Image (cartoon, rainbow, N blue to C red; front, side):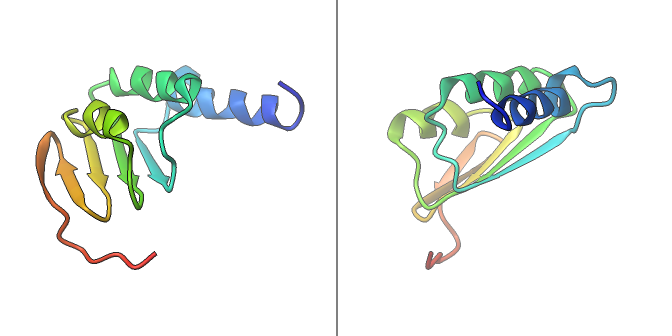
Length: 97
């Protein structure tokens, strides 16, 4: 990786998994979860009992939806559906993005 991306990547990992007091919430807005190296860091953070992931995006691929919507520490809101801590339902909001 080249600057500034290497510094940003290190800060991201540190904030979620490496610092002595890592963040306990991550809000993702518009991220499609197609970058496995990013997803791996997020899943490592989800191994902590105090971590919650909030996902707000217009849509997710079916693969990404299945991967994240079933997790107990994740809230997913898309234009078509939502999942709160593994409970899946139709989206209750009308998003005009």
